[in-house]
Length: 344
Image 1 (tube, one colour):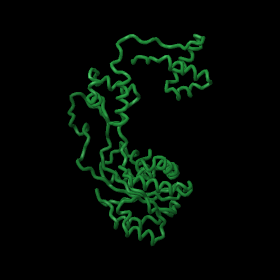
Image 2 (cartoon, one colour):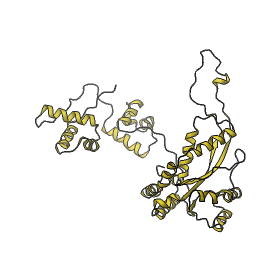
Image 3 (cartoon, helix red, strand yellow):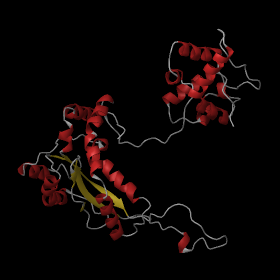
């Protein structure tokens, strides 16, 4: 169990002063960063002891810390500038400050300063041009109403991989053969996958179309145009769509595809910004489907297609509606981040 923190007299005085000023406990917590339990404890102690004096804890005995305010400031400056720094790297780069301090102590001090190690969130690389186009797109469409977004047909393709979904640990008797097929999990060097196309609006989903006739087959302009001719008109009518969205993939923006959309009088978004999967709600729909497939043993193409279609059909209308209505917030966040990444 870790030792209790030593609170300075000034910190306790601040708590008492804020309480005397009429602030609620939660407001004091937000302003000072001290836990609610500690705030209540100091306020209660002040009331018990009475008088104008501020209660405080006596300095703890024991060996003084090997780090000081200067070393803490070096740690903070380094991490703020280089978030991928490590305790070992900080120690090596500052031998005059951390020469007698262990790497473990530096790591503890990093935690004491409020920093925690996280895996970086993976996002597409955005150039200045990408950011400018994202910002321009957001400003152009920010005036759309919820009803406008409900009638946009969000479309895209997605790959689903053939995998042995059995995961986690298993039981086997001590001394049994670990290579028994019951106790192994199959892997392949190049797992096969199938591609599907689909779309949705706030009023429903289209039919899910298997794009690839065999594993690994990709979409080109000709096959994509054939797909749109066969499925898009019915899909937009079924979902009450009046505006078609597709990303900037080469097969999507081919001249033959664009001409067909114009000839068929299909209204479509022609200024979709690149590197912007966070602006396309169907990406969230694909991720939702893949979460539904986790843990399922889809070790053949037939099983994979069956499970993918089942996952697509199980998506409720409410989820489609919420994703369509999230566009306003997405655009607001893009504007706030000046074309940068959003949380979506």
